Image (tube, rainbow, N blue to C red; front, side):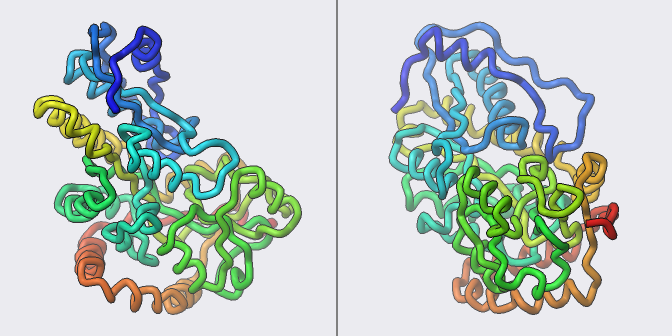
Length: 371
């Protein structure tokens, strides 16, 4: 439900920390868009939820979207961020946020595309297909309307409208002990990964035991030797627990991009219907602008790996033969995905896109012989 702005809500929205998301985005010298600074009486407030907080891409995306909405509406629409909207120390954190926006407990949310397959929306599964969307260049294309509109259309069935898709970054495997260079290295290993039916199917095909763990149990599992790895982004690596090797840092397999994280920005359909046509268009235009803004800042895996190395992290490289072993192990996942015609067709389009998109710069390892 929309609510009128109060002085507190307006103050919160207009005084948000306007930082760029430096973890996964390239550093930029371009200044942020200037936000509207004058509140409007009886402004409509839309709360937008995410499980993320801190200096991560999702926060930057929400803050830029809020700036755009404020500017385009003259302050008559206020975007109020709700960070950690799924709660603290929870499992299925992204699903909890998705359920809040589906039920109308939140008006809007930024939800990873991978999340929706547990909620009955199957139109995004191609993005999580193994070793398919593996570069920042492909991500930037995949979030454009040509590819995104068909995927976002699937959200209508759960009571939300998808406005746009935002890039986040490629996901790799991390080990807290010794490097993951072949399926044998991960077989039987408990791997922390955000809950997703498709992602879990991929990790299980490689022999891993994916686990949906809250932050505290994740850290305790690593410390106790029960959790051996994680599926994450190099841009988020600073948030990982300390490793059980002599360096104390998780070891990333830099050229083994399992899939890529892409976010969806959605609005509850009833909340959208309560807006007039001009207000709906403002949200759409702001989302479209934010997509292009986020794409312009998206870093390559090689840039993320270089920063991780500079911060003391370890990056290793699998050989071509070892990479082929991973691809062969995950091949059965495609048999399942191809059973759905829409997913099968989108996978074919993404394969063509990847084949015709220039490759990102190669990742360089660092201190790969010291664990």
